Image (cartoon, rainbow, N blue to C red; front, top):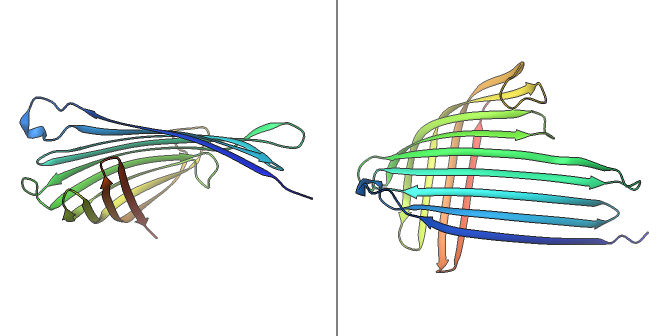
Amino acid sequence: MNKTLLAVSCAATLCSQVNAEANPENGNAWKGEVALSYLVTRGNTESDTLQGKVSAERDGIRWRHTAKAEGSNTQSEDAAGAKTRTGERYFVSYKLDRKLGDNAANYIFNILAYDKDLFSGYHYQASYALGIGRRWIDNAVHTFDTEVGPGFRSVCLEPETSYSDCDDSDDSAIARVAAKYNWNISEGAQFREDVSSEISD
């Protein structure tokens, strides 16, 4: 049997810069990014996926703020025409860095994250980590950071419908390691890679 697959993807990214507060210690203004994509798959398997992402960052003299929010929803249709939801995930995080000196390379980071995936082995998980970071490269073209520190994670197993209450949770200590690289290729092009891992028993 011949199989055909048609995928259409539309994405829009909006970048804007917001004015900083009047206090000169706040440093640079907030920088934000919004991305929206819609994926349509047709063939033996039919599905529609909507994804959205928002991020904002502010890099001041002593403090650096990073906030992220993501959401995705997938709906599939079987041969009989019945539609079912096969994917739904939400993620938010807020990270605060305290530089150890004005514009210093070394900093202390705090990060709080919440992840709810309705089609995973858990109903939601929340984590907090605190540690030390260092910006090894910092110039107009490249920045490169690494971080390491301890933290705590709570994974909720029940109930399925809750976003905060939990009757059955699995709590554990974690070690967080992370790296972030940014390359300003040109005035209108940028490459970013943000990798992190939470290690526990």
